[in-house]
Length: 151
Image (cartoon, rainbow, N blue to C red):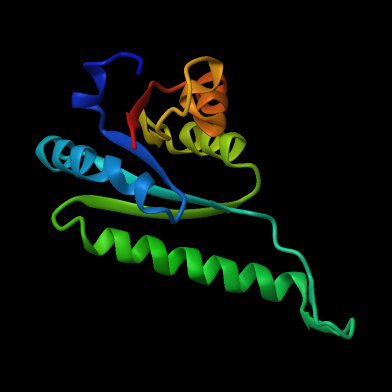
């Protein structure tokens, strides 16, 4: 965690979510702070790059553009479901495709985030992997302070 007290006054908070319940563990804390301070939360999901799907016979089931549209719609639906639980908080939704750590850092800059609030997995052992791969890479790349919460 960097700049421990600054998150209390952050006006633009980026919250990366990965469709796993544990990534949502940060929401009660940041939603309460955002509501109190009149801040905006940007719920952000990074989906993997879509690929053409083929059936067992080799025929194309879905082209890349169809898969992109499908994944975008699924991701937006997920973010809208999360947004519905954040009553009274200003929320923006954003979906991007690519490498999560890279896209999180880029989105934080584009959004002008005062804070990136994310969850890191429970450590399985001590050492450099303590934070988790994505969290480590976000910490290295992001220009905004990063608040990490253990899942």
